[in-house]
Length: 310
Ligand SMILES: NC(=O)c1ccc[n+]([C@@H]2O[C@H](COP(=O)([O-])OP(=O)(O)OC[C@H]3O[C@@H](n4cnc5c(N)ncnc54)[C@H](O)[C@@H]3O)[C@@H](O)[C@H]2O)c1
Image 1 (cartoon, rainbow, N blue to C red):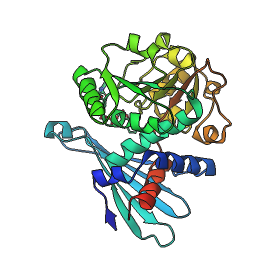
Image 2: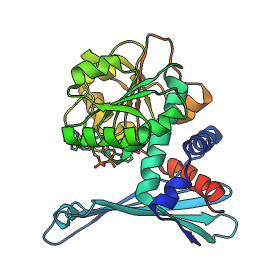
Image 3: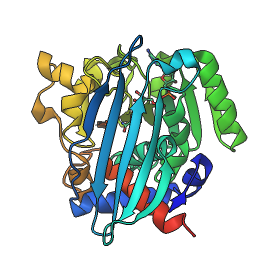
Image 4: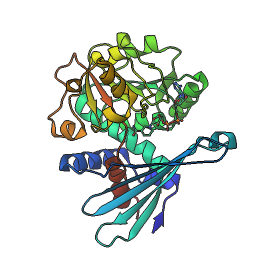
């Protein structure tokens, strides 16, 4: 069994290949079991969470094991730790162990890129990132695989984090800069992508303009929100899977209050990839909400096995 560290996992996951593989799996209609979510009590600190995410195709299977340990902040360690075990479906033999954090950041950016391939205007070149964390750092490279992204602007609640990511992107050859406020930056962008831990909406619908694409990655609990009701109401809404409307406050809360209805959710990645759920015109605002699923992990795992194991 090969063991790929973070750098080797990243090298084994080129965006064009992960995105194409993911599209193929959604077109195939592949489904994954519900993810297991276990609370692990911790004496004298916040409980930890264990997530187990399995998925398999005819040839390859994978299980992602991720722990979230909030108490790690006082230990000076990241809250999230994880690995992905990849196995051969014919024999069950273990093929590889991949770095879970790297795979998750890259497959998440790839899933949003897959939606962009089908929903964003063809000439979308100006990208605004809301958030400057691990996932945000991956988004420009992923989106450039599907659209001619040429400028990246970054806003974060911690301005020094936006500056630091802009510097990192510039060092990688990007035209990138931090921006001080969202109100002015949002209307200038073609694609607005949020990957934060926000609990109050950061993105206001009144700032959006016709023809934009909005990508919402962060909120994954009912208590989290990245965009306000008006942003949802002004947009044609899509999800990665229907689970997004159950798990994330982004859709769950406005569905409960009646700000939007289930009919306002126009399709998921299965329908988007088949062309059954689409942008209806150049003037429309499209909005994609993702919470992630194991099919995305499998797409990355298959790519790593095919591309990164030589
Ligand atoms: N949809 C998916 O499949 C998927 C996959 C991975 C991560 N995520 C989610 O995306 C988000 C970002 O993940 P990451 O790994 O980049 O995390 P990270 O910790 O590296 O970055 C988090 C970012 O959010 C900002 N932030 C923190 N608190 C905030 C607040 N209260 N309001 C606004 N911004 C705040 C931070 O400054 C930072 O820029 C998380 O919510 C994570 O759970 C989603």
